[in-house]
Image (cartoon, rainbow, N blue to C red; front, side, top):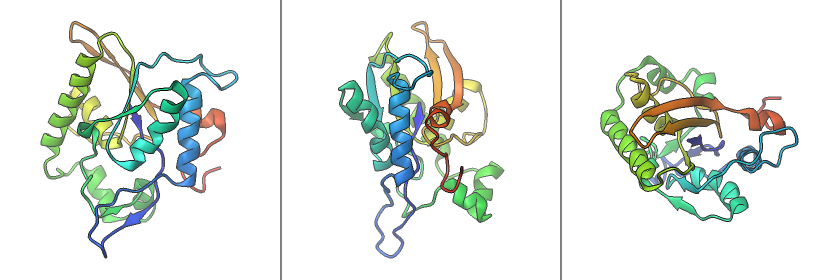
Amino acid sequence: MVRHALPDRVDNTPTGEVADPTLSDLGRRQAAALADWLVGLWPGGPPAETVDAVYSSPLVRAFETAAPLADQLGYPVVVEDGLAEYDAEELVYIPVEELRAARDPRWFELVSGEVIPDLADFQTRVVATVEALVATHPGQRLVLVCHGGVIGAYLAHLLGTQRVLFFEAGYTSISRVLAASTGERSVASMNELAHLRAAGVPLYEGDN
């Protein structure tokens, strides 16, 4: 499971349109580094990983993150609506690090563990979506490019954690789940970011 790369900030309050931002320039560099890492192009990095399918949330920032990897693999990006984020219908998208730096009340709401409306339904939808994809691809490796909340929802389910938003997934971070044919699920890693370090690509704007 891969979180999307850094998108642009969008505020569509004046127009009433749903905020569905594209990747920022830094985000495009992050997505390229992710793709190169997974196909084994970085000297000293891991060998190419076998990837059998690339899925994406329907939101632009996820699709644009998945596209460089899919292009290198020669696969289409398969859009899966069930991988959309819980706030996909909001009019404003502000990267979470901006909220944190500004000490925005919305940041405190996120980290306080307060219930977000329909979060239980959101988690149920995410778990059902991921399990259906696993069942469709027995014995295969999938890359699901989605969102921090989606990753948190599925991992919280596996770990038995009550808080869905229990950690902050970095942009283009990789979290790995092993899915056994007998039904067992194991969290193999969370928040891998070695590809950004290897490429010298920062996680946030202004980072060195």
